[in-house]
Length: 121
Image 1 (tube, rainbow, N blue to C red):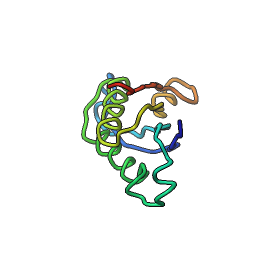
Image 2: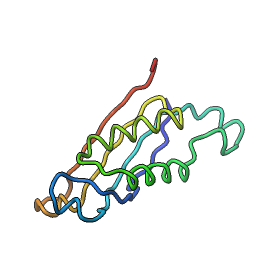
Image 3: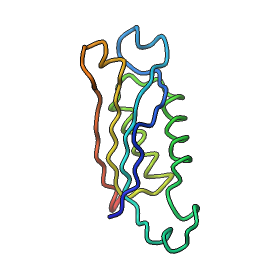
């Protein structure tokens, strides 16, 4: 299966379980791999036949910015559902990195990674 990917997409979110995290938006970094049959857009050379990086990026920014999630797991699941329903991806791998939480813990990265297969869904 072909893959379309976006690496290091920055989004802002009000997310976290601690009071200090509920006071201001914080940056998150997303990495995505989206399964999509690229043969049709390859033949047509038409943006409307493929996954539009800009449209996907904006949809994820909007979702992250609108929510008041406690857990990255919840946000990741909502993003997966959105990508499947709106963009008809067949499967995906999504990683969300929370750099401010990592810095507070004295490490380079913390976050979640999910894989979803929507075949037959």
